[in-house]
Image (cartoon, rainbow, N blue to C red):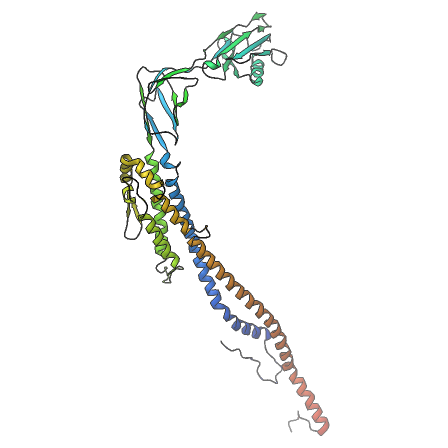
Length: 455
């Protein structure tokens, strides 16, 4: 530790010394004990940054693996096609659908029942009532009053009554008509309308006429005759919804397939996430751009993660003909990163789809073992390697921060005491000239000798 000297010139000059600067120098020297603590804190904080990044990378890898091991995830997704989309168009194929081929013949399309009135001048006043029945339901009566005595207000009254029909006004060159459309498609929504409507302006009856009858669609799916109230059919093929667009005497082939493109995309994401974290781990084995060792250089956590991830990648149970990730288009490079061939994976999926799914999702499979390894390295699980490493750093940082705080508190107390002591000493030094002068005066008074005389 260095030393601090007091610089105040001649002791009898009365100049004293700079107390504030002197105290600052003394305290600064004593603060040197904190330097190794603060250096260690800086090192730990740099490690925390890397550990946090590794935690994020590990989380991304875990998400990528989960997409492949989820029973209802990408491996369950289905795609579909129709040999004649002008007759049958697929709307969706859910994860519950089973891959396979189906034959559909559409004999007739579903129709929704409608009724319309005779032509009425839009401004004429109406009277009377309408009785409307939907299918086998109870007939509902709409009576015209002052609030519903025009075509537009009558249509509004019917719509607000909520009786299962939609009312509208259709206008052409001949005039306006009241249109009623059933809210239930197919034969179950057949409308029955009884009218006593009158055009009060012209004193003529308003006759209602049937428009389109309510009819169910008829089709044959895989040899089974089916009736559907709607042209949207979702119960004929489990997990598949399709639209009937027209009739055809020729059968339409509907093909349900496994959506292998999404599986390939998920595998590509997995490979990318794996490469990110392995590259980050490898980077900690060397020096930074300034030539200094990386924060986690030599850390057992880095070695543990590299080993666990490598073993999880190359280990895992087999499923039928699939026993290694190399059969899924994954190649391990010399630096520990991976290369992915989508074509190789798609080829394996086309030939051994169920074995690939088992390799990813069965008990004791590659996928399950890989997830287990990730859990052991987790930054959020209290037993995870990253969590424990971060917790150890936090504990050490707490101790070091406490040491710094305690030392700063001790130095603050010492600074106050030292300032008081040196101020007292300084006052003494500054008073020496006046004390010497008093002594000279006393000596002159006693001896008659003037100490200030030159002779």
